[in-house]
Image 1 (cartoon, rainbow, N blue to C red):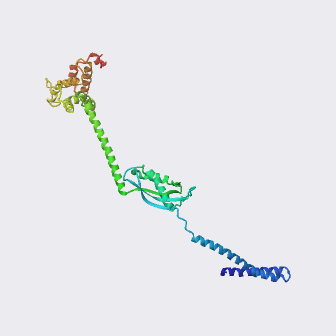
Image 2: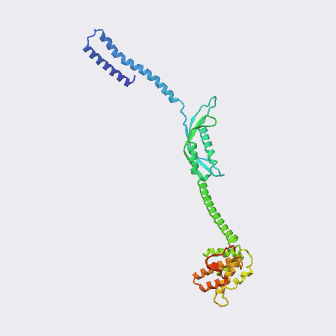
Image 3: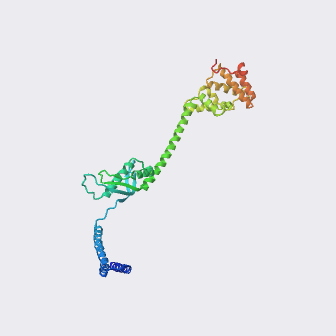
Length: 343
């Protein structure tokens, strides 16, 4: 009996004696009752503690057996930077995380798994690889969230011995691979800009070669549009336009246009030295380049418009000579434009 048990026995004996004294004062019992009660007061507490001690001995033995039993295996394991393939050769994802598992007992199976943790890790890596091998390494941040979601639920392995999941997922690339991917992305952007500029240049060349400079007439019409219909400037630049058109098509300047190359624009003077003849001749050549024959009423209509433009630019004499040269019909002077088709 321990010292604590002895103290408790004495305490209970004293309490029992006090209770008997109180009962003796309040009631009159026969004389033989007192010895029996005294024996009970002295014998009962030790007997109770002896019984309790025997029971504690049985519990202590069971506890000692638990102390010597084999420890339960932990059901989690940490993995660090395990290489998983991506959709690009030689660019691996690096997976880190904590694997959790729960052992299962497949029906009718007698196999003993000595390393369930390894089986759980293998299962988790297979599930992660099924995702990463179809993803590009440049999308590593997106793939990390995708893998984390796929591994967040407990699922059994193929043999059915464990159920596994993973958390605290980290998916990264090797530093050198990350740098190479950034350089490749920059090169792709530059290539896209260069191809866009090249396409734009090809389009401009096709427009100038196949449309604007196809012949001198097309160049004249384009030049008029570019200069807001300034006829005087277009007439002055006829020689230059003829040269450009011939150079663009690798041909000689037509015979009818070679006279424009003999003297600089604006220097040609007519027979009277006033310059009006030059303007009218240039306008006549312009009509020839546009393919408008001499008897076509469109010549008169356009000549009238040119004359009005020259008069507005303070060249009244040149305007008068231009109208006189092409002699617009009376109905045009009255404000009725002739039918462009000649009807």
